[in-house]
Length: 209
Image 1 (tube, rainbow, N blue to C red):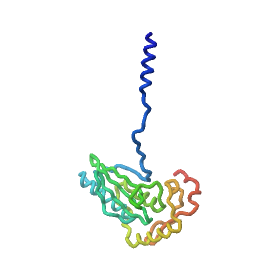
Image 2: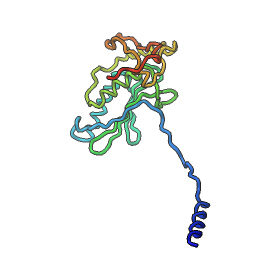
Image 3: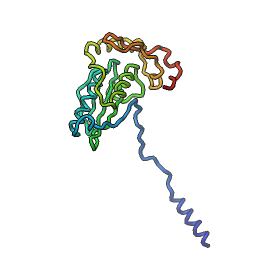
Image 4: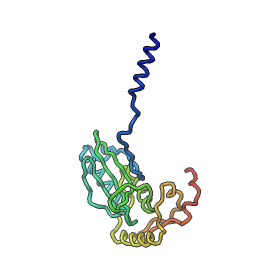
């Protein structure tokens, strides 16, 4: 008798069960980027002074690889953006202040057409600029390079536009970028805009470092 009662209750419960439904879903945008936390007490004794010093330091690093735009304060963060020689690309650093004199620093290459947006692939020069800032920013040290002169930026932009029109400057994934041969020299004001060899995608993975 008891067994039949339990069976009846179990069947009743199953009859009222509902299938799971997805109410909403979120798919993050694909991006090449890195996030780190900066302790601004290494730059100044107070939170406000430390944040200001951090922004100035990052501005200098961005100025070395492109032409910085005016900073934008949006909600709880500050966006620092530098347009790069490759047409349609920029490098963005988003600084979000946190308690205890800490700041969250997000560095990522972005596409600029038609509006600024995250990307999962970019030309070699864009990834190289990202790599330079990505490696330098966590050290909280000034850029090793001076700001890029407007004349040099204009020359590199012209060369980059020509390379893009000729199909010599494709967007590369991070794995393709690390397999690309580096230029022999990357120093000097007269260094031309670098484009990767056409056989980049056929190269083997890099050896472990």
